Length: 241
Image (cartoon, rainbow, N blue to C red; front, top):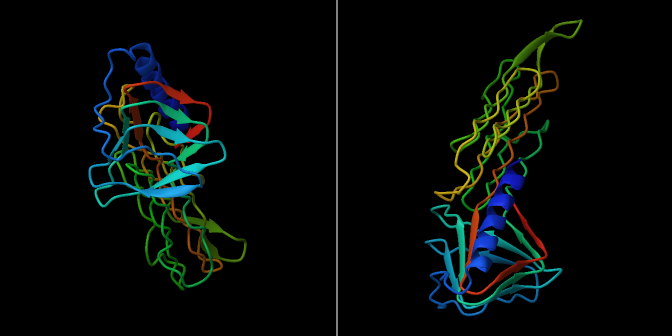
């Protein structure tokens, strides 16, 4: 639902830009020139999150990603001329790190896309079966609740078993986690995407004490992007978040 909500909102911006191309002004100064990558690339987001292009052309087969800035701003792509996206703009959040039985602690959550929020870290078991570190909450206004210890009878002894964290919210509430009822994060924002904001992170998980397992980290929330053109915007590729 996060992706559908975002893409519908982006599509509305495309329609408005095209419908009023004679009067709409993107606000771009053109200072960054033309953006036309010939290979897949990662672009550093400027401090204010704004790109002032003349034209944008992302060919088929080319994927453009963005390196977040320190303020975790969303992406604003402004153009004085036409914007053509036949390739892919990828602002997905990262997957959380999988749980493990090693000595990695805490297991980190996935990084959010530009303007999105990180997932919570995974829980750390203790050798006595009592958690040494509880899993973390997903970050952001709709961060998912972490999984919690779930005591059960193995038939031979009592132990704590795995519990999933709740998903991050955005356009809808996040899904709940299994086994311990960890709730998903609450929805937030509005249909006009004002202010522009990304998705929240999922809660971290707890695997259990039977095999001294570390829980997995929650996934990162998707980023946020605005495209504006004083000309036309034509998308035959993908914008994924």
